[in-house]
Length: 447
Image (tube, rainbow, N blue to C red):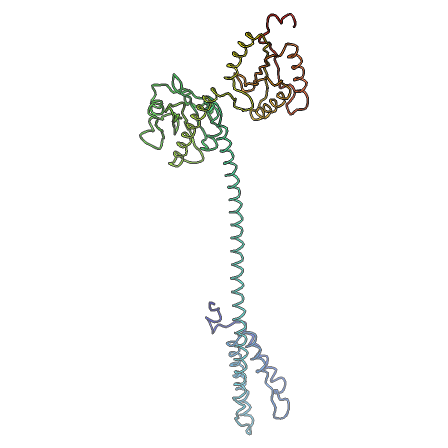
């Protein structure tokens, strides 16, 4: 424990204590003479200096007590000398010097006790200051920790939200047509790269044509088309290079186009089907990390494009449609021609329904389409075949071999009635078109 002020400066004193000692000595001297020399009984003289010295030492300490003893002893000795001169029988005795020595002893004892108490109090005060300072530091650190924790929670929440946006953006690119991938990139680019201004171009016969222009203002002068003879087209499409303004040798190629450009390339065929171009990035500079992320993103888009193209090519030859609950349109055309030829040879009816389901959301559409197929399968006869439509995926074709016109009419009425009942499909969204594809000539009269 560090030394206190009293311990380092042992002979410090209080001016107030010295003044009170002097004033008290003066009062006791006056009282001594006013009370007849302080004689209580014959031969017994009382001096109040002992009480004064003890009190000053107890209140202020050893130095002030010794000062009071010196003043009191001086007055006491003067009184004794005058008594010796006026009284011839007065003899110098041990009491002459004994009284001041007793005062000095009591002053030192009481003064040291006072000093020890003062040192202990000062030590406690220093400990209290240290503890108070530690508590304040602890409160400050707790506040900082609380603010840091809140900042981390906000950052984590923001990161989670950003990660969810990235996942949803990437999932939106899966299982779509290759021609739709470029039009679906805006959300993914905004979530992953976060540029302030960017654009997506499609590669065509005449050059690169802009499809998406995010953050562009009406006064922007960025080109909507990049011709075959321009340096940027040659570098990105022909050379398949990643162009960045951070490379001095590539800055002249970008010129007025922006700060970054990269090809969107099919890894299977090495065909460049588009270009990603960044005009401005506000949140961070286009450093090496940002370039690596952008390059990886472009490669990911290339793989998604290749998978979508492979998927669509495989879907063309599949007997099942994308939804897996109905047959594919390719199989419909094969079976339709076969059944039509067979109906003409064997002389049986061939009928069909064309079903259209109208909805605004693709996610809602898929759930309602599955429900629609489940509903109509319960009503259709066993020989009915359900196919996906040729154009939009919200169309269905149903082949019904062997059903007469009257049976088709009754089936249409039953389907409309069932679809208008509470079945999970919004009313007015399903449109049925009945058609007799072939009627044998000898049976026309029976219709």
